[in-house]
Image 1 (spheres, rainbow, N blue to C red):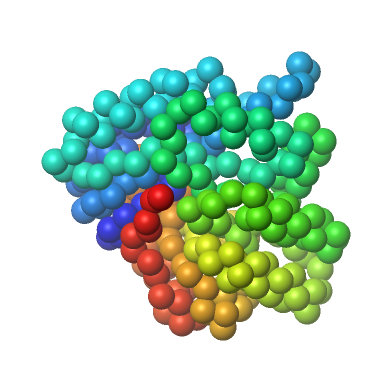
Image 2 (cartoon, one colour):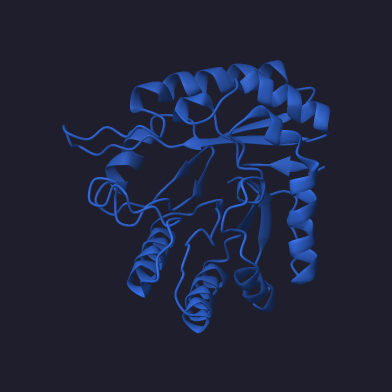
Length: 257
């Protein structure tokens, strides 16, 4: 099983299950030595008519940090625990959100771009929805590019999330641009185990072939939304196979600055 996982969610995102303690004990049982929690970050939208229902709420952040801090101390002889968040880059709200989060001891942030534009502008524009529109793919890449220029994220989650159904050459062109951005930023890209477990459109072999040709830094992330996924050896082996086929060297641990 994997040595370290930095991509784990909690019930606070309102679409995951299991307690932090259950995740930790399952990780210990599975041989994981480093477990990072990166629940879906709260976002400060300043929109009285909008309240996200698939991420942690701002008022839940303090308890998230407190519980994980206590558990980190309790299990310090058994496993290394880190407190992070998975966050989107929404240009309209990113700075004020980071200002809010700066009052908490968050150790790292994963960039996971789950929406095109912000939720308040395009609430149903999840990149995983099939689309033949290259303009949507460009918007996805543009937001990642701007986000990488604004903050030093630990890594880029599920970079191949975009479910583009147009022609193959356009897909390769967009993936090449995205891989070039990751290479320039020297940021690891994630082979995402949730995509494997749920049989989604990612991981996409075309993307990872290009990533291998570019020699991108690569990690494997469980993207755990339930306790059982922590010990899913079959999904981990499939991710390793993707890495081997495409000449990618997996970074087992990452430096948290």
